[in-house]
Image (cartoon, rainbow, N blue to C red; front, side):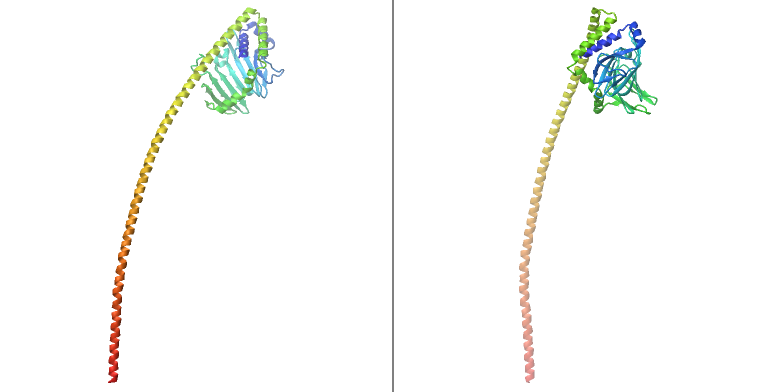
Length: 387
């Protein structure tokens, strides 16, 4: 963070350039800014860049794979270039006395994150980023764009409306010949393809945000590397002192400028920290409220389940009792029916026997009668023959 402080000092120092020094620079090369941080290999057409190197107008900055750089412009704007990127500063006009000016940069490929400075603060429409599919008009904000083959995705980071820092609400106008889309809500995104109007603004998803952050990952690693921070800080301080001396500042003036800039930066950091702390507190409160609601819902659900279980148990018990009663009644009915059937069977059998006993003697009597009649007839015949 101290490294970033020193870089911001460089910005503020460059912002206080006199008109005379600007005229001297425009004779050969127009100074645009200074390299604040770097990771991996970042080059221009003629040289390889290092922390503290100056950036001039119309230089093409190329960051390779796993590389990135942060450029601090004279109006305190910050351009962060991600890996596999190619960016050119086409126009840079800045009057430190009035903060009037104009910035036009073009992204041929890769990713660029922009934090607008004094020029955009004075006139929000004075910072433009050109992409192959159209233009991005910054209106005093922080945004990031990713240019890939035939498509450009643009993300508005902030700040939002009614922010605690009192900053101008952020907005980016994404447009081309076919139409335009205004991003005015933090973390809203739109896509733009060749030959088509930009898509509607929508809230960024977690996966999309990961892609945007991944492009700047290499530069974060460079900032946090513990090996080279002290050496880099010393080098930046030496360069700043040289530049300030060249402009005619004395030691005491240099110290006061540095102190003032550090105080300003500290105030900003304190404000940012308090804002983050408030956000964390709010988030915690929301989580607690949600947790309490969930607990209440769970208790209600448990009670409902208990009551439902009791009802179910009662219903099952009543059903079982009814089933037992039905079975008992059925068994009784079956037993009664069986008993009745047995009685009927018992009663019917003796009747049949009596009938059979009665019938048999009748038949025998008939046979005997027949025999008797036959004997009588036979006797009569014999008697007739004898006569």
